[in-house]
Length: 371
Image (cartoon, rainbow, N blue to C red; front, side, top):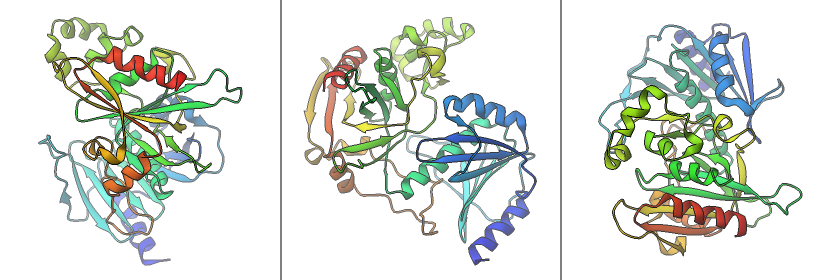
């Protein structure tokens, strides 16, 4: 056994990670199959309901995740505090790098995640924090795609099935924007006009197999929207519980826009079955560079190489839950020039001026349907 394997195995045993996990759930994410093992059927039932159409029959897998329900484990390591994200003040994570992997502890819940050298463990009160287990599974998929050479984008994405394609040809459009711009809201408006959903917040982008254009891969995470998005889209009428609805309706538009309160959108219930796909060609990228009260909405095609100011809206660091394939603890994120080069392979559209979701959604669906 290698030194890395020995260290990771010993640490997993000290945390209780060698306990039996006799139950399994399989996920088919296109080019990646994941098995989630657990000692809790309750947890796997929750994951089954969440991942929905991506749940698959047993079979060979690329990634195994083990989630063990139990008390929050004691950590036999000195942990480093991860600084809060820009604009945030609450410390949410502590971590330690070890030979062959990384341990992350969630400070608010006590959940512990150990990953690296082929091992992916979630330990602690998993049932109460099923959302963190879901995020961990999705992070393993993101890391898998990054190891294939994909670029990580901070974007939602939608697609349209071409009526004349016969073989199911898709046109795809990524949607990004600066903080609070409303990419998820726009994605829901475009879905209400008939589009398919690809991703909510993370997008993996690679060169198409044909050598022409780009392919985008989404993450099987349900969109999370604020009350204003739900209350202004009839397809999302049932997302906000009746008990909350009137309270939000009483708020003025600015307060509703800035409200930090999110709901998961179960797409099958709101839009019908079969509206969530994970891969599509990426024909274009819409960048929301608008502001409330800034006048008329302007939509124009631009070139990625000429607009370095727009690239940060799409660029996304791999973050705490991804490790390089070579086992190093430090991930080197791509530079802006690499993003510019990749995005030069698709159309790029800047939406500026004032906020108008209906106009932006009309443009998006027109672009998807007619090019």
